[in-house]
Length: 321
Image 1 (cartoon, rainbow, N blue to C red):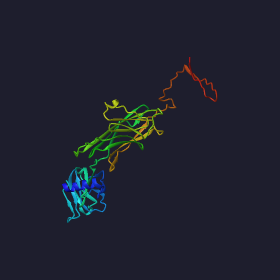
Image 2: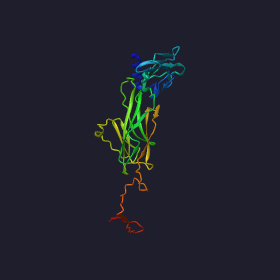
Image 3: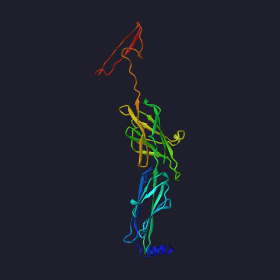
Image 4: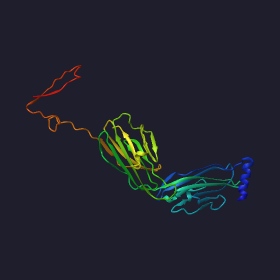
């Protein structure tokens, strides 16, 4: 081993001669767990005409697959918890793991070694997460389904336990307006966690507040808005409350839903909630339920209309005896 590293260092320092170049690893960022679910891990390299000595695959520094061309058979497999290596689809360039479970999440490494005389060895690593998705779609609850200008509507979105905990994105009609990024432990504890997000929508009439696509972020939450200002101190009492300001659409109604996502392999949307504006009720033309003053027989109404410029001005006077 000492001689191999000595030769490698000497040749590199002396003339920059290499027999192993462009080593790269391709590992799915995430795959679903379950019976029959699989992941293909690839390793590419250029030996520049030198012979291959070995390919070794590791998970969290534990070797689970080895390919050595000089040996018969050239492949050797070591145990993986609950999974197996598909030898038919594994060789010096890739390895296929079958029956994935979340305890196989972690860093995977590919180590390539060239044969004599240089014995150049290099290694690359990449993370892989095995996802246990939630069983049900996200559930949304809302404080009110009818609004008036000036109201603040509160909505909650909850997602069942999953590994890792899902992110939650709020959808107003077809627009993404806010997102809660779930906290993820740096250590692999493999625990399933639920996700929760709170949103407050303020209904205003001011034209300067319009829906937008740009976002500002604070902590792990994002809110997409053109004129959004996030006040960290204002949210301390509400935990991770997201706030969004909305000018009512021309139709006076909109839909609100939330989507749970885990990387790019899982996305599920809640049932949309329809929210409509409370329109004022017009007075009855028959006089019933009318808020107009009731006149007795001793009172009468004289309408004095002084119309100027095609009736733009009109005075109405109530005269009583």
